[in-house]
Length: 400
Picture 1 (tube, rainbow, N blue to C red):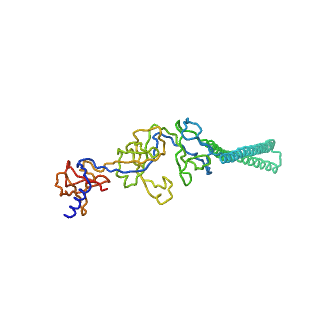
Picture 2 (cartoon, rainbow, N blue to C red):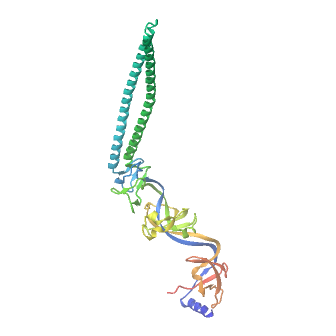
Picture 3 (cartoon, rainbow, N blue to C red):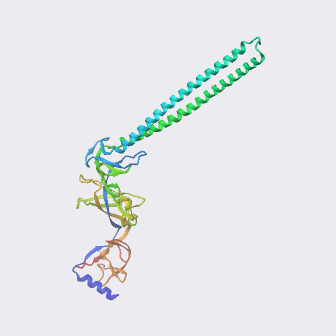
């Protein structure tokens, strides 16, 4: 052990003058670096049309240029209408046929009704004739057999009239049901026609609000691209944004083991890749509760696609005119791990046989003080015993 001490002391004195540091009681912080991208606070997402019971692919026909100020309800994107028009023509034909079927059914029902009315009238006449024949024979002058025959004719005419009345009543019920069925078919055809008309009208996408038109990278097939003429998307896909550039946030992504040590309010230093040297600052605003894989977020089909990361939203203190959504950045997050700890620079520690020592200013040139080490980061370490706050530590110079 003594030979190891002597070796360390020789190292300390071998490279010029040493520096000093003071052991201080302070919050112990961890510094982590992440990659992310800029995003605006105020924006309205624009989606491709959601097709109603149509499954053809939407192909962009016209897309307005990025960075243009658009007004609410201004047409910003159009899609090819060929399939929508074909669906509309088919639905219009189906609706027309149902309308004609209803007219035909009404004609048939009216014809049947008139025939039943004629039958009722005929049977009433027959009954009246039979009854009149009996009434005229008040003196019972007719032979008995003729009189019995006349009575039977009255009964038969009565029965036939009852049957005709019953057929008329049954017809009215049947006609009402037939009309209702045909009207339902017509309403269904009308609804289908309205759907196809709505699909056609939705081929023109309008700005939901007034703002700057912007096309972010979105999932188009198996890659992330910007929507442009000729590109195909599914219905309901986010394809653009109407943004306000007055306030920005940064979205950074951390693996779960790092994310658990970050808290809302932690300060963040940022540097935008497109503008190196420009230092920005902000604070952690929100941390997503659940991680998402790179495959879901970036369409990464490689081995790294399975890596799950937590999204962390950082509110920027200031915005600049040159900022745009989607700009990549590097974020340095300083997060507090422990409060009121005795912290020293990691460079002041000397490791001898898996034990840690420091050289204090009041010790003689050949003495080292053993310390107990707590948490440590890439630059600092927490000391739990061996020295006290205010002790001046000697940091050996870095070897050339």
